[in-house]
Image 1: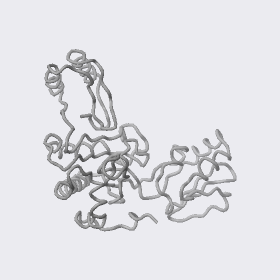
Image 2: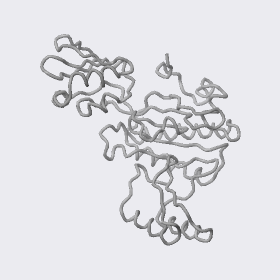
Image 3: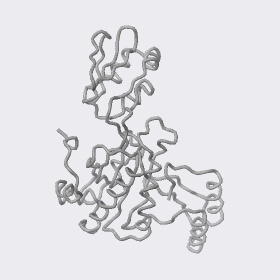
Image 4: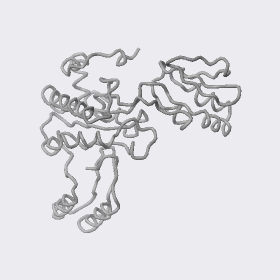
Length: 310
């Protein structure tokens, strides 16, 4: 299984290639949506030889069957400025806890964790994992006036209006004359030239990341960072594709105690899944069958208005 954040040193990569050149076809896939490293093409008699040598490198083999499957995390805090928590640390904490559940299939069907450091969700966690941990923030978007003016000088008013203001899904952005910009605890603003500024009403922001992706640096995630926890994402099986459902709108993941709370939530979810899911049923399908209210009650999670789509 891959290391958190997909970080390898060159010696490990060379060792893997040498092993597969010796025992297999030499073809290795890094990484599919499953998160696994796939060593492709070997004769039956060479499979165990390759297995033993890869194991000696320190990698766990497996990740199939009705068990906790291979987890994935984005490169995140290692080199991404949008990261909202330490994805690799969260990934490692979960992985260390559930290693036995990976090696010993004992669930009704598979269960996946995925970790994305921001709402861009580069791991496709919301669509493809039973428990998705998505980085987010709960204060105001940060702004940098010098970078905003630099961005505007390179682009145009048309691009600002058409690519950012008009594409905000909740109309959070307004383009105003500087003298007309409001102030308040939930307002962010940044001047783009000597006469105009962007006004952002953060109460309306849904953290879609579009504006931040277009004006990176000029706009940035807030400082009060953490993660949103979603359950039930999956591809087509019994009832078709499902997106993850928000069950905890915001969870801090700064300290070891915070990580323990995340692991505890994962443990309680897996225990409930093992006891209540039908054969060959994913978590999302179980929640659809028993009802979200019943699931939240069993997990002792209070309903938050931010979990409701209006």
